Length: 228
Image 1 (spheres, rainbow, N blue to C red):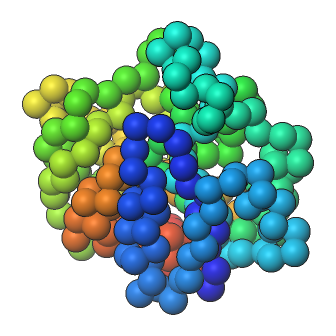
Image 2 (image 1 turned 60 degrees about the horizontal axis):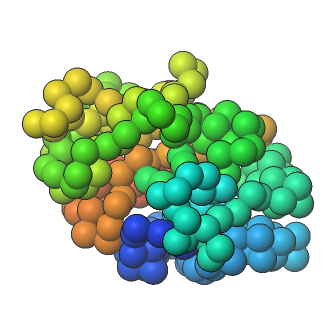
C-alpha cells in the first residue's frame, strides 16, 4: 500500500516527523514517499495514485508581519489543479491523513476545513508551548483497548471542528484543563479522513501509544477496519 506524504514548512522539523510517520506506518504494509513540493506531489497522483495521502506540512498564505522573513520561501495558495487532485483522490475512495499543522494549511480554500473535518481559525485557535498533554480516548470502537496516556506536544485548542466528525481522542494539560478534540475521523466525498492535531515533532509521533492510535486510525481510513 502506497502513501504520499506532502511535507514541509516553518517552525517544525518536517523531515524528521515525516520520517517518523513513515516508520510507524510501515507495520501496516504501507510504503511512504515523502515530497516537499506540494503541487508536484499532488500532480503526481494522476499517474501514480496512492491509497493514502498525508498532509504533514505548514503551507498557507502567511499574512502578517510575523511571517515576513518566511513568506518568499514558504507562502502558498493551493492551485485549482492541486485542490482538484485532493478532491479526486477522495472521490476515488482514497484515504487522507492530516497531521498537526495540516489544519492550518490551505487557509484560503474554504473547502479544506470541510474535507479535514476542522480547521485552525486565526484570531481564535492557539496553543501553549509544548508541554505534557493528557490524552483521553473516547468510547468509539476504534479506541477499544486504549487507555489514557501522555505525550509531550503542542496542544491545539479552539479549532473549528465540524459536529459530524467522530472524535477518538481528547486532550488536556495544566495550561488547558478543558478537553479538546485532538484526533477525529470522518468520511468525505467517497473517501475516509483522519485528522491528528498532535505530532509537533518526531518524538511525539513515535510515542508508543500515540503511534498505536495513529496506526488504528489509518487502518480504518484505508479500509482495513471499519468504524461502527
